[in-house]
Length: 299
Image (cartoon, rainbow, N blue to C red; front, side, top):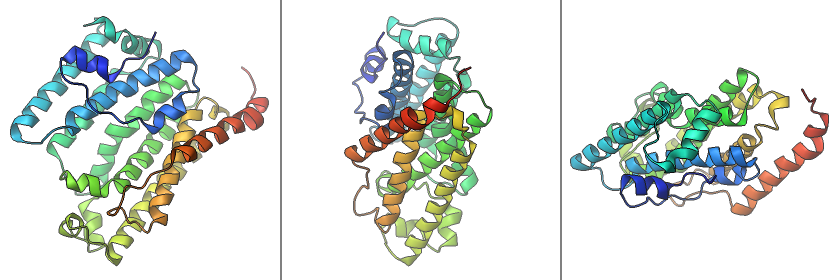
């Protein structure tokens, strides 16, 4: 069985396939057993496709109506799958993943609703508002992923939620320019006011001491979520959570690079190189083989 792809989804909806970049996640997933790898890649394809519905194209009043209609269409497809009805044979990998790993329907619906938020909301008054958004577009992905990986401790759910916060906040800091060019400012208004840095300053790409102090504050908070997530992961779950730990380190390194650049996010997109990502993945795998697996008790 092969995973569901965005091309399959576009074909079913009878639209042109979206342009989806290869994700950092796919490197971490390659080493998984086939059943889990197919499930993860299928889920990733679905979420990438849903995200593309909102992100691609213009944001006119008419386009928003069309995008809303498409999101409702896909919510209905998910409902069918959970009612044991396959609208097409292409959905078997998704149906299999849902049934085999007992993925709660609410997780998928929450993510669709989170993506829908971007149709109507382009500013956030407080961090609590932003945190709710991060939960719906990132933390629920982590919750689905750990269902596929398998876990023993309730704290692992909190680990997934907090790592989701950390990774989405890192994305927001990296994409400050790209997001504002699309009309979005995810940095909460209360933080802008605290550091006397206005929306107009951000739109005009003003780089000054206030901006640096604002970004230092956001970086510190993001780093705290990484540390909180790590503190919640039991040592004997590190083997099953290997891909998540790879993603943790890749995104944490991205956060470090943003900071080391002096927060010059207006000048260029800051990235972690492919060779560095590969090195991180290899390091974690070797660590498991040499130092964790030999000392892990078998049930």
